[in-house]
Amino acid sequence: MSRAFYRMSWGLLLTIVDIRLGFFDILPDFIGYCMIWSGIQALENYESAYRKAKPFAILLTIASLSELLPFWSGSTIQLTANEVVFSLPSLIYSGAMMLSLLLMLDSLLSVLHRHAFQEGYVEFAGSVRGRRQFFTSVSAVTLIVFPFSMNASTDVLLAMIPLTLLGMLALIIVFFTLRKAGKTWGYTGNHENNPMLVEERDTHAQAENEEIVAEDESVEASFASQNEGNDKT
Picture 1 (tube, rainbow, N blue to C red):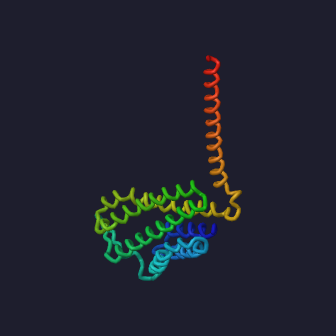
Picture 2: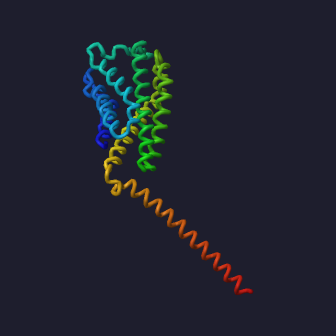
Picture 3: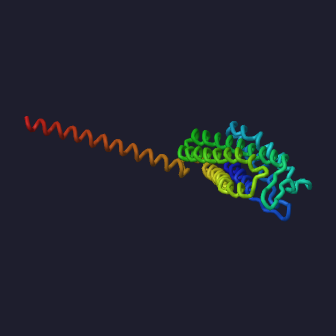
């Protein structure tokens, strides 16, 4: 199970990094999506709910194959002196890919949050929930704004750079979340040695000890006040 999370994290990283020689992508997204698909397939053996993300992984894998074809050279995006012009097919393709990625990772993080909570990783589950909300919010805003970039001026595109950087940050956060999940479930079958559970047990034990001490002090204080009342009488 740990290997599946690590595999998906590396697959996601391949889709984030874009290294090209001319128009040739050295690290094609197709390989990354295949790794994510494979990871989801493996996770189904442990938690069937992970299959919710599989249709989107399959769609992304098949669609990304088009980027390996000779006619896919990025010529659908034209740069001029004052504007960047997207063709309609390019806009539809990019929008569909962005939406599929959003739905896949949102489904994956949703199940991961619930799975972690059920396994007793309460702190990690809370972290996953917060990161999922950040990723989903940024991706949704990017998806809404994206159609307006068609035939937009360079000034408008420059104004969108912060949102693009936030989108990259959101994906990197998901990458590290999957790495953390791999590390967490690396202790599967040996929960006693899992540092996350040990830390949570220590925190609960400390809280219980503090409550016991507070109760003892209150009892002692009540006895002391009763004794003082008896002495006065």
